[in-house]
Length: 171
Image (tube, rainbow, N blue to C red; front, side, top):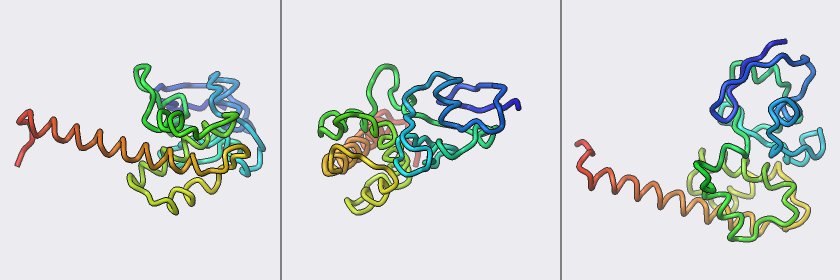
């Protein structure tokens, strides 16, 4: 079956078997190996991507279900060689050890912050509840999401201040 899907801003057209899972399509067909496969049962969250802006476990979504839709993977986070604030915060707060769960944690966190730019600790824990980390104990992951939220809010305030200072803001 021919599918057309936008992945990380780029349109792909591929001939896929109808039973191909999105995780395998991303990894094997598109060579986007940041999406990890840990369980094939939605238990671990290592394969989390955004499908039309919503976090999904790509190990249980068929590639054909992404036809005509937009997918964001962990590879989409860095821009022009600069780490996304979430990636920087995970590094700075020591929110990773083996790194296997990290792409899924980053994408679930990204989806959470798109929906709720300043989540509480409880909201972060709830937002990440579908992702398992066997190494860190989650404390530093929560701290990293909080740190990234502050950084992203500061950048937004700075950008708004620059617009106002440049005189391009309208009344």
